[in-house]
Length: 312
Image (cartoon, rainbow, N blue to C red; front, side, top):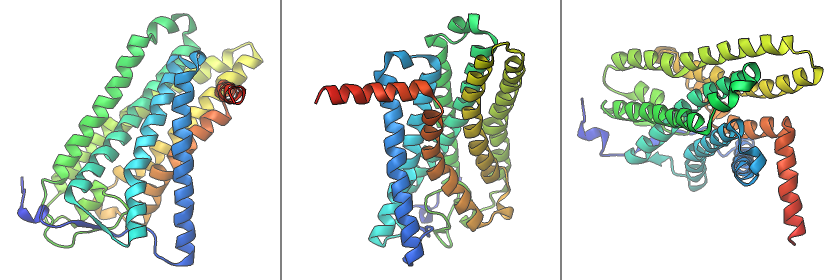
């Protein structure tokens, strides 16, 4: 490993995505509004699921974990980007960069596996309802959730350590608004082709395998829903599953575009656009999609509001 002094002696420069033109000032303000809404929305989802006993089920426990991951993901990137923009500084320390890479990559990996667990949960609930209490017991649900966190964190450690095993002896400008390891590989003065090949196979495990689980689960779910005699049952099952599939499609589509391409095919502008989508927009869409399309979440929210009013 080339742990050269040059890697640690100076900060990196985040070029960011906004200038100080009127249009970009408006877009920056919009990002801040989205951040606040996403922060409040995901926090509200976590608190609702924790406070309402009727939501203490595997499906809502998994949803609370998804909200927690989204909450951590958006706070990993946006506050630093906002601080740099408002202060006029574009620098980020090596330690700060490594921390961003670790949390950012870990949380992406965690969500990949958690979405697969959520698909399996819906498959068991719809296709094997009588066996659901045993197959998705609190212990099993907790183990699968913990495995998602562990696998994602392991990937984050590997990516952060591998990224800083290279030397950065030339330009230290990162064409992103946060430290993303593919963007760092572009400015490395070492040959990163071997790591990129390893990264490709890691992505197969981290992305393709969960996608295969999701496709298999929902293929069985769709067949089971079609066979349902009850129209109300079909409607409820499709409403629940379609919410999950919307999240899956947005999340995995962006992840596949970002991490399954070689460095030579990358465009900084494309990477920035896609990064904004799944680091800023996806965290706000998840609570909106699940809450607006879920009567139980809406009921819990109104219940909490009712208690708040009665207590005044």
